[in-house]
Image (cartoon, rainbow over all chains, first blue to last red):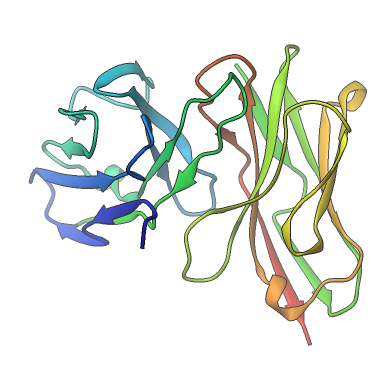
Length: 116
Length: 114
């Protein structure tokens, strides 16, 4: 399967613990996005990488959240001192930057986080 | 701030009925428009997209959408739904010329009964 993969698919943690999620984009894609989706809502943009550079962070991304894409390939999203409000599906997407406006984002299956 | 609104949160249809899902966005500039679908247990998949040109866009599985710039709308249509169309449908917009972060609507959950 050459699609976007995410690991783990499910994570249950206790409040206050740290968690880390991984996203492996489609191999030739240089753009990588993180979104968060809560029940009854559409995905909300969190952050964006072009290669290894993190170019935008949403105001949704508090200081407890950090994302990296060290070699411009896979990315990690870490949440420190988790809170119950962090419970959500965390989605990763990737795209290939062609001419402006033409790139399609391909989504992974998501990591469902439950904070007890 | 840009936003996307989807008019119906839940739609229930019988097979062979026609479908139209509403989507309106708020942004005065040039946008790219998308419909994504999420089938039960699966990840988001692109149904169709509009960047420029013919405002009537055809996508996969018989879906189409019409971009009406004056109404800031991008409604999704299918003339005859099937049970397999049961899914959640998301309208999304990105700003043209940027790096294409998507702004999604809240989604419409479609149930098609045999």
